[in-house]
Length: 489
Ligand code: GLU
Image: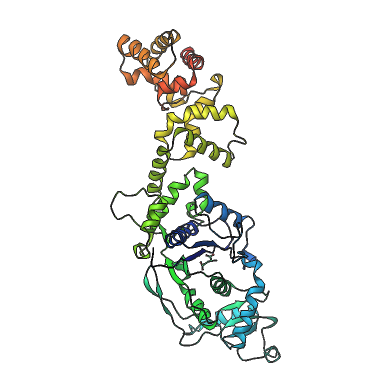
């Protein structure tokens, strides 16, 4: 975009558990805008709330973004000119700004105990008070003065002094304009010396040269505080884009407890391809102009990206669409590539401790049999399990045995004889021989003729294509299985 200066965007998750799918959704917009304008996309880890940290969560954020192809240009992992990119390593950076705000009278110390604050809130609620929030007991007092009053503790926090005329309406790149209620006197420095999110986010967005902030609409109520902090510190605020909430198809919120797909790791565990999920997130953000144009590359998304095209009304998380996309991307891989993806999935899901060469080769032979019918990578092995089972261990499922017809012994006998003599063991030759013997010779309808063979070979009523399966299984195994079912009838 020739007229737009290079943007610096950031995603700033807190490492408090499994990364949320919303983080990837926002990172997608961040990356698209950074690429479109020739700028940079930054990952900053916001870990100032030490009580909520979950070990390993920051690593998971890096990994899942990389898996999706949304790797940042600057981050705690790769570094960059504006580091450190982890807020817990920047504590000294924030303190001078707190001092400045105190000196300017925009902030004040507060020594109230949490018990006093809880009581104050309960009293306000009981009285159905119109004005709620901190009652400013500490405002204008020295520590000595405040100590004379109840509910005092010696380590103060620092609060913003929100003016009566604080601006509450602000421009937004997605919604045009947004408004928020009047904020409380927000704590910006905690008693443990850590800044709160509100101070750290403003200082870091400024010092890291962030030009565009993309974040969820749940942060709208915080924005007036951030804009005041920018103003008090004499800084131009970044442009803001509050992304619509992602909802389930029943309009419920996409929370991690009720909707496991709120977690980014869920998609990899289930066997979704990153390109399918990425494409799905693109559709959530920017619905295609022409119906049916659902498949998009990242380059196409970037080329078309514009804030005005993002639907502010909310994005509906329709897993059926994602399944469709996943099937599409699975079919667009070569069988070789798909096998590699399945192997990587089995290893990462812990189903295979190591990719043993013999099993990988077995899978490589089997994957073309199921590629057309897969929705998820995780379905491949169960569908191909009969290839990995010893002939003697193959179990014939009860429902498969139950539907064998009276003709089954004769069909199996004829098939065994025909296949025993077959000169070349290819699926075409197998099919030709079986059709000649069973359909033309015995006069059995194809569907009925091949059912017992399918059950003998796979143990089930449904299996990948029969003749191809027999080819992959090999002559010896196929005949052993046919004989074994025959003997059991
Ligand atoms: N640390 C905040 C979060 O966890 C970031 C919000 C923002 O992007 O400003 O979502």
